[in-house]
Image 1: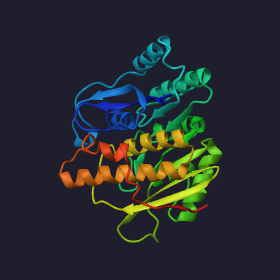
Image 2: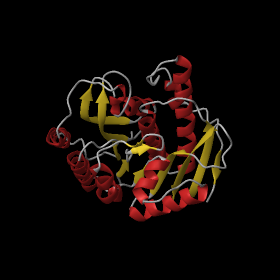
Image 3: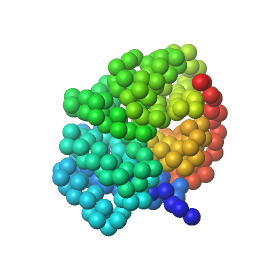
Amino acid sequence: MLVMKVLSIQSAVAYGHVGNSAAVFPLQRIGVEVLPVYTVNFSNHTGYGAWRGPLISPDDVREVITGIEERGGLCDIDVVLSGYQGSDGIGDVILDAVARVKKLNPSAVYSCDPVMGNAKSGCFVAPAIPVLLRERVVPQADIITPNQFELGFLTETEPDTLESTLDSVDKAFAMGPKTVLVTSVERPDRPSGTIEMLAADETGAWIVQTPHLPMKANGSGDVTAALFTAHYRETGSAATALARTASSVWDLLENTLTSGQRELQLIESQEAYAHPRMQFEVTKVR
């Protein structure tokens, strides 16, 4: 049996679950081999307002990737996955890694979670990062997984209705990506107490609606991007990937809310990744 292999270039924390510390275990639990490359090694995520540990320099990140390549570890990578990009330098390293992987395996894909902010907090990254993502990174990506706010930022639009969100997705396609997952879709005509995700590729677009849980969960976007990317790569179906991902992530969030803990209950929710309940209907909208 061929096992999917993902090179995941993201942050890492010792306490809690964001970046690679959120993405790696769910991928492993569904049978994916993950090569995690860290861009920071912090004690905890920055949402606490204080943290310890080093930023890893772009040169050091590149050295780690070069070492993997020297062992022959890049030749059978199926997916390069990236999340929060803290500097131009890290963006360069990620794009270089994508080019190296695709040269060795032309069928490999690059999945970019273009982390910039959200509708409630606004843009919380350095001013250079949205420009980096819009002009250089996203055009090289095959899959992108923005939230609705980030989709608008990337495409210089203001998606809110289903129609305007689909129009923004089309503008994202024109930038280069072939597949778009939009998280945290909030359209005014949705039922109260719900939230949606939308996935689209060249075959169509699908939306899934779930109850909206009253919580902020750092790292849930990293889990979402990782699981959707892996399921899409495995099945080639945006609808199936969307259904599985929505099921798994909603159960993870509900378990976290029920626990009363601030950090994702990532390990406790592992059955939700391995055996998604598929409890939410996916509807084709285009």
